[in-house]
Image (cartoon, rainbow, N blue to C red):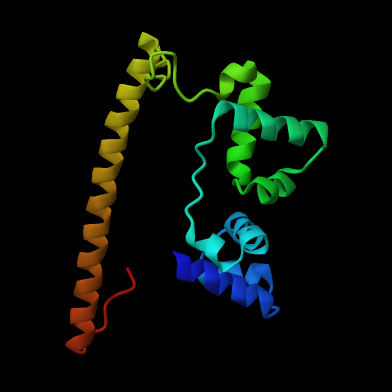
Length: 169
């Protein structure tokens, strides 16, 4: 991964467009922006580090307050704090929805908070069962049609090989 980061930075420094770099190296623009920011801030050694998105609640809150108070874009904050824009967006949404409590990754007991499972009505379960049954039938029908097509194509190929013309019907 380090080699890829260095290659991307060197390509950017040589004047290759970000779009072309992302396309050639099969990376997203967010990653490239972050790597360029890290390189600008810490040099090549910074690219060797692994930047984990696990920040404390106070760190997240400080970043969010800076974004909100100074009208920073996600891209600007991402470069400033070396955090992906996707993580920042998630923190902002959690903060706006649940306040500071939304920034906690774990509950008081130290266990990961479980998501509440959605309860389905009997009508939804019946519909799901029917859709699954219909899907299985359609998959079987599709497989049968593919086999029939392959047999027809094989027969036509054999007739051509024998010098016979197949009828158009």
